[in-house]
Length: 157
Image 1: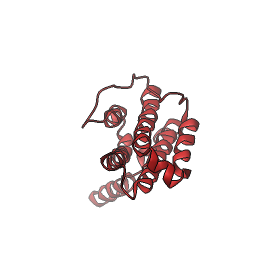
Image 2: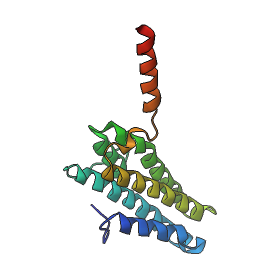
Image 3: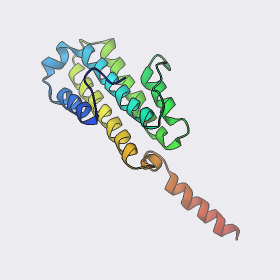
Image 4: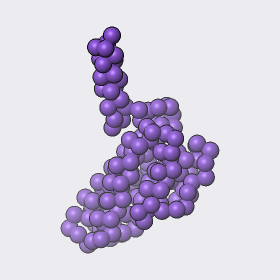
């Protein structure tokens, strides 16, 4: 489910931008709400991927987070999608940092880092939606494995 009023990645990107440029005071004043929103934006991003594959986005949680369940669902049958697994986990990490201590002196910085992680997720998924197989080379060593396999084949001949 896309957050209230969120229709596409342009709107999601605009919300991320708003968090990135907000003043430290504005971020600190509503830190928990911003952390929850970033997590919700991550879910909306993954919902778009799952829906594009013709599936209904899951409502279950993995390790207490729907974002992680959506990632698992989105990666099923699409190994290249695993490239964003750590990005999802990092978004959860930043959410937890803020929620555990919303009054921390670094809360604005933590929120901005979380927003950058959400943007990374949005760009990855957006790219996957536009170009099939984009994640094949992101965060993996497929080109190296192919070269290694070719080298072994020529050595055995």
